[in-house]
Structures are given as C-alpha cells and as structure tokens.
Image 1 (cartoon, rainbow, N blue to C red):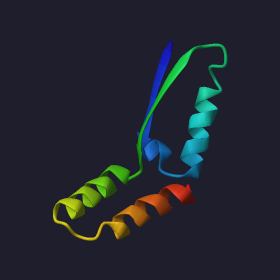
Image 2: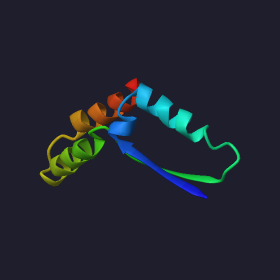
Image 3: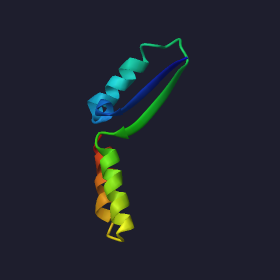
Image 4: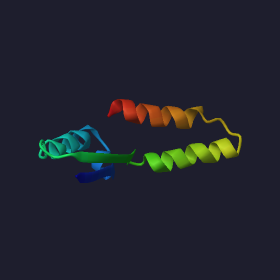
Length: 73
C-alpha cells in the first residue's frame, strides 16, 4: 500500500488539485491511501475563526472567507 499526504501549497489551487489526480493515476494497480490536510492557508483561517469565536466576535466573515476560497478552487 502507498500512502500519500497532500495539503498546504500542494492543494492551494485548482491546478494543485489536478496535479494530485495526475499523481494518483500513476498507481492504477496499487492500493493507495490519501490524506488531505487543509488547503493553502486554510489552517490560518481556521485559527482566525476560532479566535473570533473565543472572543465572541462575529464569525460570519471568517466562515465566508473559508467557504469562498474552497468554492473558487
């Protein structure tokens, strides 16, 4: 079994996601496990969301920023 981990810069945009597909297609006859972590700067954005929540600030802007980033990709 091959294990692949992708995240951050490797999946920060549509081209990066397409590249992941190209890599995985190189192993059609093997069992693979794929782990995908946060895309681009999503971890930082999630931390900002959490801080806003803890401070009881409006989280809508943070959520929309994260959502729109993923929808664009």
